[in-house]
Image 1 (cartoon, one colour):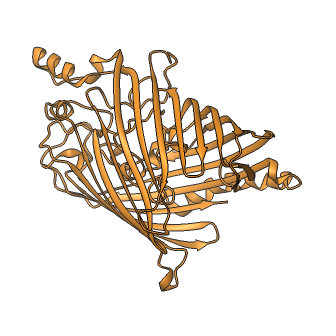
Image 2 (spheres, one colour):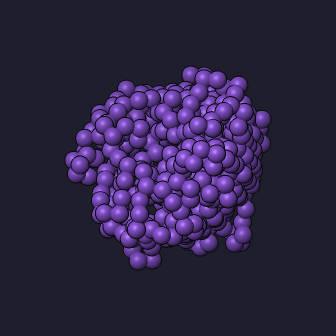
Image 3 (tube, rainbow, N blue to C red):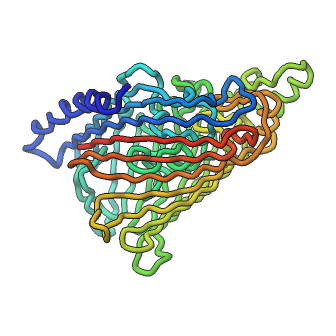
Amino acid sequence: MKILPALAAVFCASSALADESVLFSSAPARFSVHAQATVVDEGDFGFHAPYAGPNSLPNNAQSATSVTSTLFLGARLLPGTEVYLDPELSGGRGIGGAVGLAGFPNGEIYRVGDPQPTLYTARVYVQQRIGFGGGVERIKDDQNQIAATADADRLTIVLGKFALTDFFDDNAYAHDPRTQFLNWTLMGAAAWDYPADTRGYTWGGMVEYHEPDWAVRAAVVAEPRSANGLQLDTRVGRANGSVIEAEHAISLVPGRSGTARVLAYLNQADMGNYDQALAQAAATGAAPNIVATRAYGRTKYGFSFNADQELADGLGAFTRDSWSDGRNESWAFVEVDASESAGLEWTPSALGRPQDKLGAAEVVNELNAPHRRYLADGGQGFMLGDGGLHYGPEAITEIYYRVPLASSLWLTPDYQFFANPAYNRSRGPVQVWSVRVHMEI
């Protein structure tokens, strides 16, 4: 698939619908219409690998292309009451079939449930704001956001289908793979196994209380029926995810803005258990099979800390650290039990490039002991399984440079280096190149 024809095809569909915003020009404060299209073409150069398993990244040079296009529709029904609908088209694939690396290098692939272009409803939810005074805050028109003024002290309630990352674990410099870092474990808290279907969405409810310098939010949502599955489990009493997050404005550099966030989560689902899979394998002489140990009542919990801080004009930094107990099966996001990351974003205005962005970051991902033993004895997860394991933390370096080609059109070359891919010292290192083209209106 060629990157520019693919981008043109998917964006034309979104643009044609977004142009219907002229219908709403007489009442712009009541509606919001936006669209985006993103194509990522990436590949690796081949690497050393003395052996491979069923979920290994192939060691021959390869490339792959992903496509997503989204239409963001919003309408204000009553003062404070808004409804949003996001049709989305996605297709393509990741290198190696999106397995073989814990921190996969294309964050758009988690929105792709089928290599063939597929149209589906990404989000459909209702949002209610309840104001408590405290001054007035202006909310700008944006994706899934209608221009308005709102009380600075307010309660927001959301019910429907959405992505938990729409509201949680935000970061000014490392959150959106369409415009920032591409790696899965840099766009979010890697050890937060956040509930979602294969494309990253779920059903549930979220509530947030917001004041100018701080906010607290919580949500309860559905889990997938199987690990990394597209179908959500309807037994919500036995399979669900809960998350709570608090954030506070900080200023570690005088006169410069920043935010710190602390998140805690608890998931329960029909998960397998690593120790039980290892015990069954020892009794039978077969390779451990996590699927055979699945049972309701299994849980996973964890925490994350996430902060961003402006350091100077055009320069910002971030850090994100997360941990989970990791006793039970990785279920919805990535096979990571602990992760630490940090990075910088720079706008080279002094060089006459005020629209460019340069980003550089490092992330280190780790597994707990039962998860390590499971993979070392030949077990498979939904992303990993080399048939053996010489364990080492997976260390990833990512560098990107984003340049505008035209109004609302950006080109981003990206490079990622993986030491100990899939936590395996016997394989790699892996070098991944990417070219991202992103449009939005």
